[in-house]
Image 1 (cartoon, helix red, strand yellow):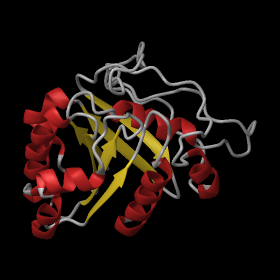
Image 2 (cartoon, rainbow, N blue to C red; image 1 turned 30 degrees about the vertical axis):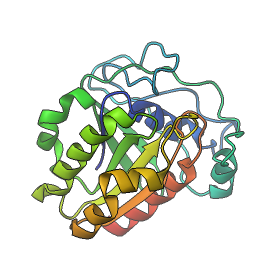
Image 3 (cartoon, rainbow, N blue to C red; image 1 turned 180 degrees about the vertical axis):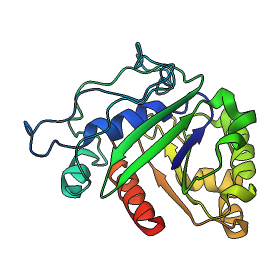
Length: 229
């Protein structure tokens, strides 16, 4: 199980839907998956961008992606730094108020459980059987950074997550006002946090909106869950 956590509005749901739909079909029509998405009460809007109705059926997972991870050259092309990859129509999202389950099919099936930011006080109820953790930060919102840092400290100090691998995602780097990873590291003293943490921690800059960095996220999920097998 992989947990996807972060404050409200950081873009968690858009990330999950991008990961579901970005993989090419195999043995099918060769096109990308349709805009399916995680079940539940919908998902977060990717930073105030246009959104609509989410996938209906609270607590139900929508169909998993049908393609294994293999064509990473394809993913890297879509996730180019200039964000010019054709990702298709933007999937509709809205704020998550519960939990969404989504399956990503790599060399093994990886289940991602997204928890709404408003559920922060009870996140710990879902730490059991967590092999990996995706923690998302809005790199364009400096006023939210301190709250995200407090959340991250709580996660890294949780005994149930001591063995989990952690990927910190700095999202919304497509926006002109975003903070660079070096600025964020300095503001929250991230090197010190990583040095003191029990977990193996990786960081990556992404744009769930344009697709930048999604290939790194998929590689990390594949490698981490192969190791944790």
